[in-house]
Image (tube, rainbow, N blue to C red; front, side, top):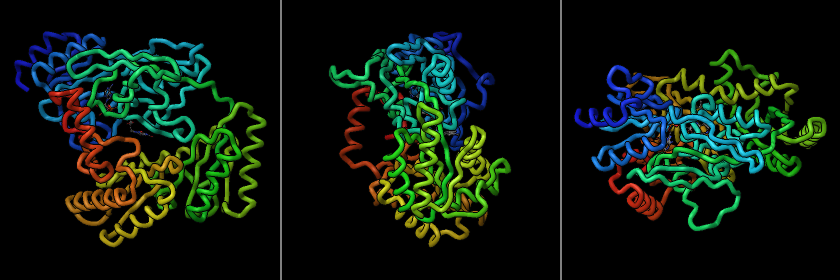
Length: 463
Ligand SMILES: Cc1cc2nc3c(=O)[nH]c(=O)nc-3n(C[C@H](O)[C@H](O)[C@H](O)COP(=O)(O)OP(=O)(O)OC[C@H]3O[C@@H](n4cnc5c(N)ncnc54)[C@H](O)[C@@H]3O)c2cc1C
């Protein structure tokens, strides 16, 4: 991008531009920490009109734009590339309205998720979208990536919580679609184009979210199993016998033992090791009744002999300790530089076979393989981490690339998806064809061409 454009943008948006040394390193890369690129300029508008004008200017001058929310993405989508105008939504922040009769919360796109959760709670409601990055990720980023998280099993992905939104097209046209109703069948549901399209079809500036009544009781347990079939049986039993199972996280022993070895804040609540661990959570509206019911259903299952052991949380602190184990992935990611990090999806019916196939394939081809397997199993979503501890850094990096190729090929062969929640971004583009047909990708290109004919929005991402 030439200096002339920098000067013009600075003149057009004098209060919104950071340039040169004023641009901190945080704008150079998302949480994946891969392919960092320090931008010369960042535009941080506070008003929707300014974003619209910026896009109109960039579209006229064929300037590519990358949009940044909280930069917690893990697919490189918000990481700048050479020549791009960086548009940060961090200052387009705040709650516009809580409509307690319609049970909706409306907020600007740059508002951190945790602020929305708190505002909902303060108003006597519940916003069930929740993920580990809650303190930093923005609702605009959540919508654009159709974020998943810990409670998808009952409440669905972000898409299920978005009732309306405002988005800006590449040419600066503002599309206001601020629906508040659960039902609206008047023509195409345009908001869906912007949900999960990772900033390639438009910039989300404001969102109407669905709220739920406040949850009054929550019960958690950590359960141990010998094999995958027993876990599936447990999931279905719990869903049949409890009205609201909200989380069901499966962790293989290779993951749990790695977390215990690396993170001194995590400890094993059992006295021995088991092959598989499930963290289950159920919500309700009556503390006493729901608590007794949860304990009984769990005890019944244990008695049947298909579960090896179980520990029920007696307090919030106990429940937090269970979640520390599940969230211990951050410690592994921080400790291991060269590792393949997956958020793949496969149908539950082939998940066990998939894990065994991946283990066999990688063990055959990689010396000193390290593998951690865990994830939102009930959503068909697994996070695998794989790496080798042997060899030089170059060798480790080459091994990581070979792991990506091998695992994604198996995912494709088993009718899975290369990304169940983090998105394709810049990092998984070449693997999209392994899980989407030629016809699907052609239709995606048609949509992109129709909405952003010059291809200025997040180029080289997704497609
Ligand atoms: C510790 C941790 C835990 C996580 N857990 C989960 C999880 O459980 N489930 C899950 O799905 N993800 C998870 N993530 C990934 C990440 O938090 C989500 O993808 C989140 O939705 C990204 O939001 P963000 O504001 O940080 O977006 P960014 O990282 O800034 O951007 C992500 C993508 O969205 C685009 N974008 C951002 N804002 C907008 C906007 N307003 N309009 C248009 N495009 C936009 C960007 O261009 C980019 O392509 C986790 C990340 C971390 C670090």
